[in-house]
Each structure stands twice: as structure tokens, then as C-alpha cells.
Amino acid sequence: MSESLDGLHRKIGSASELKQVVRTMKAIAASNITRFEQAVRSLDVYETAVKAGLHVSLHRQQMQSRLAQPATATGVILFGTDQGLVGQFNDELANFALRELADASSPVFWVVGERLAYRIRDAGMTIGRLWPVPSSTAAITGLVGNLLADVSAWLKQYPDQPLWVIHHQPAGGELYHPVAQRILPFDAGWRRDLLAMPWPDACVPEVMGDTIKTLGALIREYLFVSCYRACAHSLASENASRLAAMQRADRNIDEMLHVFRTQWNQLRQESIDEELFDVVAGFEALNTRRPQKPAPNHHGGIDNSSKALGSSVTASPAD
Image (cartoon, rainbow, N blue to C red):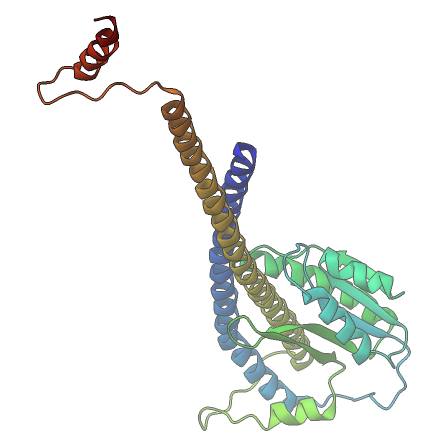
């Protein structure tokens, strides 16, 4: 019995320690969600400025569209995770990407996140390069810069080919969903949307200097903003998924602790009952074997009248 109680006591202690770890991870995940969502909101102002610059530049420079040409290659940037405890995060994104690119020509994947890369390799796809997941908002800038350097080299070999960015996007609280965005090449709809963007006042500025260089720089910034936003959304979604997983783990630990404590209380009560039964049984056994003493008279002594009467009766026949 004592071994079972000791075993349950160790399980309760281990579960309690694990619960503290889960609570810490929940707090970290919730903090990270807020941090990455703030990074996306802070990017909105810069993105508005870049689009405004493109709006002005496109009025001065006409871009040629080559979308009518058949695609011979497809570039795909995927944002996944390096760490676990995120549920079906990587599986859902990999399945979504493969469905979206089922008809793509010779897709090449730039994957952010080792666990997502396993799924892509298992599907028989080509991975151009694998990048680690950034751990902070400051690290996103370096990652996106390296990604765009690889993409630029690929575009020199395959100009005007489609480039997709696929990632999870937060949907509020612990929810998220996968999204796919084609960021290259720029088509007529993209230009039309930018040209239709209203200017905040009546004074529309003009581009100073080389319009083509300015337009090229603004397009690079537009690509940077698109990839930065996708990465920040993915990191916020990863932490939302981890928070949901930790919520489930916390509930499961509470249920386990309830079961363990109930079993411990039952075993402890059974142990106490057995000890009480042993005490009662021992007392009864001692009381049964103990000799009974004569009952005292009203003077506190032993009543000897019966002995005297017996002696007088036995002596009468001799007389």
C-alpha cells in the first residue's frame, strides 16, 4: 500500500511541475503573439508609403506585362516552424501548398522551418534552400533580405516566372488559416489597383531623378514588405497554435491531477481504515485473553460469605 501511495505522490509532483512549465510556455506564446502582431501593424505605415511611391512612379513609367507567356518554373516561399508543440500547423500548411500548386510547373521551394521542410521532402518536392525560423522581430529583417537575394538569383535564370508566398495567417485568438499570395510577376490588376489608390491631397508629387531606378527600388521594398508581413503572420500563427496546444495540455494535466489525487485520497483512506481495524482487532484480542477479576463489594473488599457458608455446610455431618 505504501509503495502505491509513494508512486502516486511522485506522479502528482511530476504533473504539478509539468503544469508550471506549461503555464510558462502559455505566457511566452501569448507574449509572442502580441509582439509579432504589433510588428505587422507597425509595418502598415511603411507599406502605405511604399505603395504611394509606386502609385506616383507608375504614372510616370509604363510596365510591360508578360503573363501571357506560359510558366516554365514556379518559385514558392513557405513559412513553417523549427519547433514542435504546434499541433497540425506544418501538416496543414504543406497540404494546402501542395493543393494550391498542383498544376504548377517545376515548383522550387524556399522553406523557412525545418519541420515543414520534412513534409515537403516527403512529398517529393525540390527544396531550393532551407532557412531557420527567426526568433525575434529584429531577425525577420535579415531572413527576408537573404530570401530576396536567393529569389533575385532565381529570377535571373527564370525571368517573369510566378513567385508565391504561402503561410498561416492569424484569425483571432488561437485561430489561424493558410493563405497563398502570388507576388510576382506584377500583372495588370496589380497596376490598376495601385493607380486607383486615392491620393491624400490634391498635390501629387513627382519622381526626381531616374524613374526606372526609383521604380525598381520601390518594387524591391514592396517585395520586402510582402515577405516580412508573411513571416510575421506565420510567427504569430505559430505561437497561436502553440498557445492552443498548451491550453489543451493544461486541461489534460488538470484532469490527470484530479485522477491522481482522487486515487491518492482513496488509498490513503483505505490505509487509515486498515490501521484502525488492526488496532480494534488487537484490542479485542487482548481483552479476550485477559483473566476476569472478582467483583468488589460495597466496602471495596472481596465478598467471602459464600466461602464461609460453604465451610459450615460441609462441617455439619461430622457433628
